[in-house]
Length: 135
Image (tube, rainbow, N blue to C red):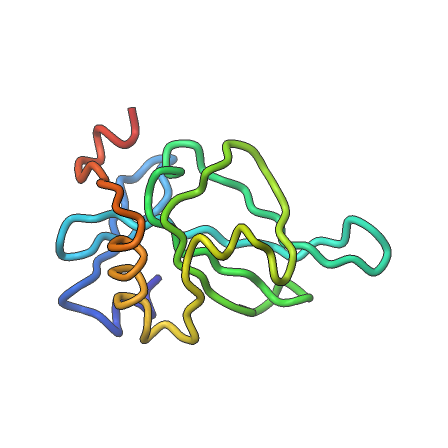
């Protein structure tokens, strides 16, 4: 998250509410962005999937999905998703149709543009108040 903020110091900030709340990103416009890391798992012998654990009170937010590599030590790829439309843990494939809802980004430098495109395409509005999101 800090790398993103350093790339876009005037457009992006890390928001921490403290306590048990997760840190999120906030655009200058007030839009909150959830960041979800997805670990690689092997449900069967040679099958590779990525496990996504949605955060219940952040599901409606635009999400930066970070898929980790086969060893779960570095970033494999990044996607900006309009929201997470599932409430429980699920897995996705390398070329999963669920990812088509969002936009892959080649690097962190493309993050803000990808968020703008995903928000424009989704046509959904997001409440800007943290209090209303977390209730």
